[in-house]
Amino acid sequence: MAPTAPRLVRSLKLVALAGGLWIIYLLPWPGPDWLEPAKPTVAAVAFALVSRRLRVGSWPLTIAFSLTFFFHGVAIAYVTSFESGNDMAGASPDLRGAMLYLWAMLFSPISLWGPVIFGSLAYAWTCRTRLNSRLERDTHSRGR
Image (cartoon, rainbow, N blue to C red; front, side):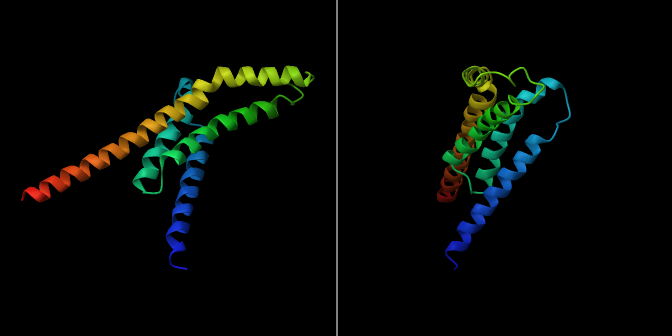
């Protein structure tokens, strides 16, 4: 049972981190309204930095977490297209699909590319700084 305990702890840390950041993302943030589109990118960067700090993250996990914002936005747009007060409520499936595609293209810089690019850059920067710190520490310890 001991060999699986670290894997279980790692998984629990990842789930708690991702869940906590999603809860923070879904809550209203104080500040100006123009800050709202930056929420997915801020959450992705926070995930990259904190998961690396906890030593549970990886580059693929950072990408996967960053992609969830896009899929969440598409799902919300799809579900709201059926609401009775929406202009899309009586639309044909072809028109609904075209409008969802248009939504995905218009909002992909906010909910797809921003989190993926900045989350990946934050993860790479964290890995690089940690590597540089480790190399510097090793160099100083050998020189003494």
